[in-house]
Amino acid sequence: MIFSGLQLIQLFGQILGKNNSGTVGLQSHSRKPESGSVVEKRPDIYLIIVDELAGSSSLQRYYGIDNSSLDSGLAEKGFQVLPHSRSNYYWTHFSVASLLNMDLLEVPGRKALVYDDYLSAMRLMQNNRLMNYLGNNDYSFYAYSSFMEKGLRPAVRTSFQPRLLTALKENTLPGKILKDIGFHFWESDPVKTLYSQQQQLEAYHTWVKEETLRSAGGTHKKPFMVYSHLFIAHEPFLHDSLGALRLPELQLRDTTRAQKVAAYGSNLQYVNRELSSFADSLLQRTNGAAIIIIAGDHGFRPEFDQGYGMQYFDNFCAVYLPDPIRRPLPDSTTLVNLFPSIFNTSLGQKLPLMPDSTIFLYDKVEK
Image 1 (spheres, rainbow, N blue to C red):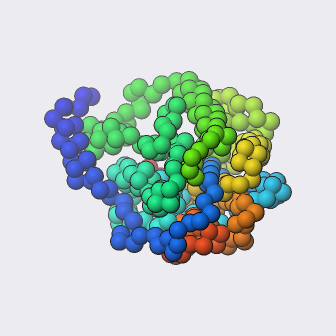
Image 2 (tube, rainbow, N blue to C red):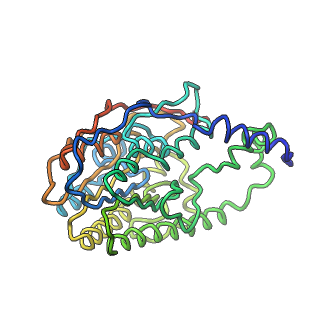
Image 3 (spheres, rainbow, N blue to C red):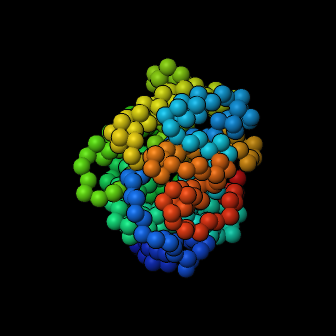
């Protein structure tokens, strides 16, 4: 099927014109974070989002996975592990948009999310209040994430981000038909597809870690924040417990809840070693003088076909605060209040807090 040029042009204008402001917005439209006072102590900040990294208590309770070694290992390095941390949303775009804007989101009241919602949430990620707030305090901002256009672009593309062209096509009748039944006509070899994705993700993760550590070892004229996004805990589960890459044929078998739980738990042992080494390198290169956050954007979600559970919000979260500003943080905060809690507690700010809400959003593919 061929999309007519006129049809695409009309849709392009409709989406970029009518929806330029986005279908998803912030609840506090006019609210601007109050600084209280100028931030005097301005440590560098590292936000490491590990997609789908769940909290250890949730993994033990719902899936029988013991991941307490991650908690204890980071605690020994000086991190505060927040045992009852939760995300406000269990979809990455909305969870990270809320985190970076320190606000809950306004989402259209339709029954299911559409691509426009994801795209507008991504715009909120890319132009966020946290970046503007830190900029007002003379911070620079660097992003090593496939979701961000500002900062440095990723070396490779991943398949987790909706593209504007995809959204355009899916708003046409031919596009809807192609999306629903097109795979019957041209589906490529799934083993080759997974192998290609595996290589891309490995290259992407290497790039994110190297660039993050390079920023930590560089010379900067002013304080800065780094946002890095890893998919090492997210499906497809690329590694076994020893860190070896799993064959695509094995990944294709991760279809049932039990199989996904087993693959997630096995891959998690590799993830823990990677995060422990990553944390060690960051602490060494920053001389322990930076704020370092390692957090999942939501919990583990192996059983969408069986309904939606509160455990999908149970994310992992650990925060390292340097000695001069080290203060105990609430152990049950949600991601929307993570940065306000850190800034208020350790940097003397007066940022408003939002309700610690957990909000179900249903994807049209899953629900």
